[in-house]
Image (cartoon, rainbow, N blue to C red; front, side, top):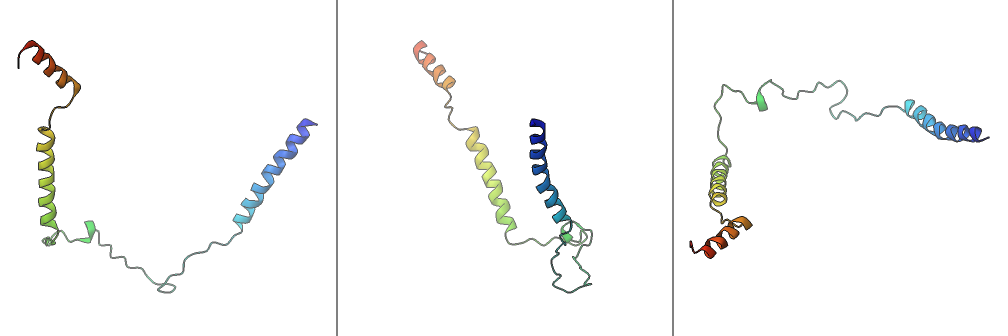
Length: 106
């Protein structure tokens, strides 16, 4: 009796999944309409160069490039010196200072 109820329960679980798979198999595939009409050849401008730029031509700088580079170098410089010479605030440095005061070294 118990085996029969387990089979019935398993069949109820399997049937909806099989019905769903069957309904998805016969559902037509919908595709987006081509705005240029059917048979239009797409020309995406691919020419084989990196970023589509011809390497034999010289690069013309844009207005944002020089200020960006200057700001980047200044930021790295400030961070380097600021983090290199920051105050020592660890507990070990404080304890060593206290020991030096007690021994009269300072």
